[in-house]
Length: 307
Image 1 (cartoon, rainbow, N blue to C red):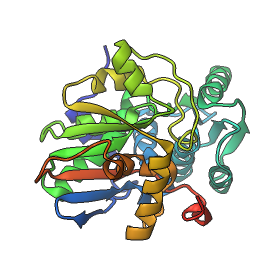
Image 2 (cartoon, rainbow, N blue to C red):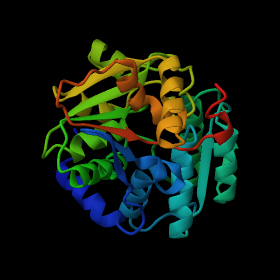
Image 3 (cartoon, one colour):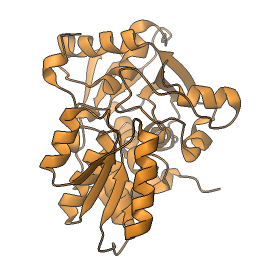
């Protein structure tokens, strides 16, 4: 079965260097760091995997690239495609945030809004790719995408020296899987955090395989996969990984706290990992060195204190 290795992540880091930002890490309390991946190009970590997938493909078809997304992956693919001079066609569900749709328009992507959830947009994108021959850039279930996302983990370890635990949000699982591989040499615990209303990894671990889940709640526009990716499940079904669920209320509170305490303007999905810490869904041991990845900023700033 295809997997992703630490060497793949290191190769991705070399390939995409110069195209992505080395996002900052800030120590907000003793032994607690925030990795501010929300400051990445296009507003999320997703651009890492997008660049690595496109740049790994060699000669691209005339139809360019195509992707389905809840919003952030589409923004990343559109950003990478524009930077590389490639046409991008993006399919998003109707629940996608207007902020993200407007961002896609600014990046010059060809946009189709279809379906109520990500899975329906993905089905439409796959059909279109078969018709046009465009290169498909999956949101989370491709080795090149996972390896690209894993470069976040490489950076985190370099910037902190080492940590005991990394908290990271899970939707389709590509980001958490990449970070798991990217940090595998130093081997911290990975706390995979999901909304209670979209428990793709948690449900898969209980079932022993990826299974469909219902999609709803405040994180649906970015963590809206209806099942964990097969590659992500293979990587995350590991003793290093702990699955944790958080409520919508905890995510909203964490988002507000990130803004009020640190002036970090995260979207709901970007605050999910921090929510596990604030709510007590994950409780560090005394002296434990913890890093939280704040992974997305594509939100309406006016809503930061309105909820």
